[in-house]
Every structure is written in structure tokens, then in C-alpha cells.
Length: 329
Image (cartoon, rainbow, N blue to C red):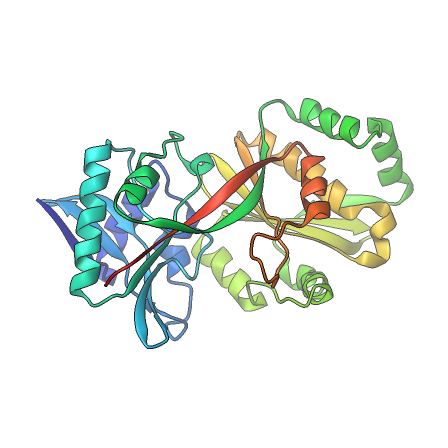
């Protein structure tokens, strides 16, 4: 018999164990990550799905309020939420979703919004659960175009493809790096990186997702999951790329920032090239380069053509991130 119960702090070990053993769990589903948010930001209402006494699936989520109505959102404090599980047949996915809907109705929710994990994060690139959501009356309320770099060759070959797309030679970038006094440093020195991050975001009338202290807190709660690459010119930081290791398969390039005073030296290009080399050396299969839509546009689908083109030069292909939604009457 399927039953659903809310997560409590006493379930922490069991929760994290299933995330780590699941086929689609990521850093963003671990309690280490979810619990770093201050309690006043939103009310956690994460759920655990059992068949009798066996834990089968998780839903990290929170209660939000919209126009006086209670909304279930999975998850407002993470890139992804949705169902976390081992790959399962349609009938079982269908059971989970039906039980989830009953639970939300009984607890007086007016809407469910789920940002399901894209297939590139899964051990098996299986979309059975997404189909089951549609079958149970969920609609795709939002779509985002994300760019993904496949790490499908050794680093030399991957970089060679980039040089070719940019109509440049390997020697060109080697000479530019040496002549400009550029060096790489892998070090989680967020304090030196943060001013560049703030400046970049302000340029587009935006703010970083994370405060400086939150980056340090995340790094302590999830050791070895945040990897900061710094680019230095004669010892001065002129750019940086912050990578989140989502799971054993996929890394997210969360921030790729540069000091625009040195734009002619192409810091962003050097940083992505070095990140590709690192990801290849660590055995990852994908680099998620993030979404490429215009922030605050009237139409949320509005693409950012130059940003998409920049990512495509590194071999990125488009992957649509889907937001599933269902209203309860």
C-alpha cells in the first residue's frame, strides 16, 4: 500500500541514502543543500513515499502562498525538485502521482508545481514519470532552454572541436595565455571571486542567487561539491567559473563570470575550456551550462541568441527544462 508522510529531521539519514542510491538524485536534493536555506525563506514540506514500510521516492518541496492560496512548489530553493527515485515502471509512477495528488488535496493545496530533474542527470535517461504526470492531468506550464556540453571524448579532442568552431588554432589560445600572463587556480576562494560576480550580475540588473556567506555555508555542508576555477592575470583575478557537482554524471556551470576590463583576453572562453578539461579528467558525462533566456522578459520563452551561440561554440546542445503544474478544484 502506498503511503506518503512529511519529512522530519529524524529522517535525514534515510532521505540522503535514497538520494544517493536513486537514478536521478542530485546535490540539490540532499538535505545538506535543502537545509542551508534560512527557515524564514519558505516553509519546508518535503514528502517521502512508501510502499508499506519501504521508502521508494522523495519529493523535496515547500509551501508557498499565492493570492491567499496554498501552493506546493518543488522546489523554490533549488534548481530542480520533483520526484527522486530509482527508475520504475509506469504503473508504479502512476500510483505515486495519484497518491501525491490525494495528499495535496487533503492538505488543502490549490496547486502543485514540480521542476522535474532533466534526463541528463539520470542513470537511465527515462521519462516515464514525466509521461505519467501528463497522464494524470499535469500540464507543462513553463519551458526553459538549457545548454548541455556532452563530455564524449578526451579533453584534447573536445578542445580541438571548440577551436574549430571558433576558427582559431590551439596555438592561438596557448600564445594568448602565455603572452597575457594568464594562469588557472582551482581554489574555493569565494571572497575574491564575489566582487566579479556582483559586477557581472549588476551589468544585467540582477543579483547573484547566493550571498557570499551562503557559498561558504554550502561548501561546508556539501564538501567537495563546489569547485571554483579562478583565472588570474599576473596574479590578479580577472574571472572565475563556479561549478556544482550535481552527481556522478553531471556538473553544472552555475556562474561563469569575468572582469569586463579584460574582455579582449576572452576570460570566459579560457574558463570554459579549462572546465571541460577538468570534467573530462574526472569522468563526468555532461556539463550543464544553464538556461539561456532573457531575464525579466515579458514572454518567459524569449531566447538570448548571443548567449546560446556562445554556448554552442563549446559543443552544447539544447535541452528543454520543463515545469509541470496542476490545479486542484
